[in-house]
Length: 150
Image (cartoon, rainbow, N blue to C red; front, top):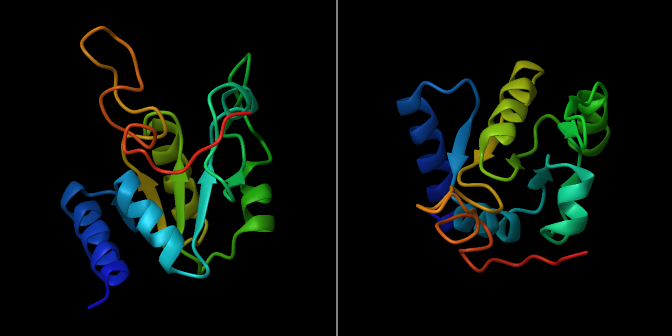
């Protein structure tokens, strides 16, 4: 079994164990491995435009706001934008700051026919540490995966 297939199997198993309504959950490192290994995989970053500009982005990902800063109103065009960029049969992994908005995006995608929708655990900045700060405990940046800052 290839590494990518093993990751997909583990991701599906985690989702099943947790009773999630979408295909799987992956760690940031697993997401990066899949992104490199599978030709039709997508990472959709659902953070705000402000976060992309000020905090950073993963290169070559699709950027679709789930909520818009500063009011954090839901993006009424999210599903339309997703359908424009990502085939419902493709593996699509959602990324946000900590894994919460990306969970919601994966739920919505699965409800609308995305059979391989997944959430990237820990998000871009990860969980808060004991001082209440993100970016030092876990997540994409802490895993030292590729990213750039605007």
